[in-house]
Length: 193
Image 1 (tube, helix red, strand yellow):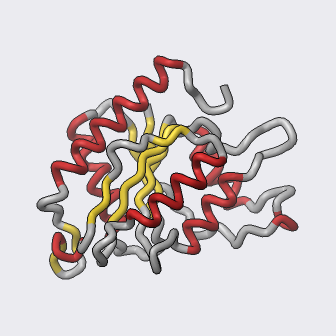
Image 2 (cartoon, one colour):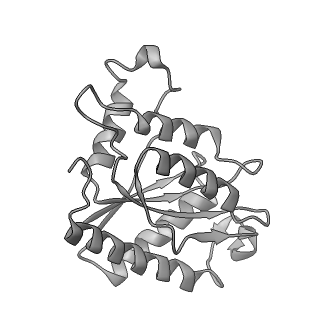
Image 3 (cartoon, one colour):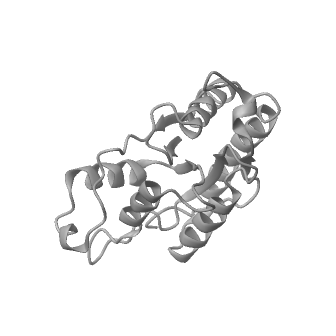
């Protein structure tokens, strides 16, 4: 089984990138049999229907990574109570069909949501928008538990994330998501099935 994480911020030291890295450590300790990688996507261009066929190489690369993963774990910040523009752009590319006979790589894909923000929302507004988008394109969203970490800087030192109060919640979400993937696999709910 393989989990692909996507950090919704392109900033190298972003809290959501660090949260994804922390989740990677949690999964590796709890379930060494589960693969976990974090997607690199900073080379994905702006979505442009004129450039869809053939898609840019970066888009083909990220679509392949998503298609091959058993599940996605999205870690999104929140900008102005919304999905960050670059992350929305990536999701738009991923939402598009790969061709006349191949649906989007997100169709039926099991997805978990987590996020952290420096404000009080914990990225929950962005998560609600992502759920609306993913539901529209028939992704298999694990709605509970979601992880929202408000005032994330209070769990960091000099910009380095040191989860304290939120650590048990991250561990619980990791356990729930792995079980969600196992149930999904057992039930035959696979992408492009």
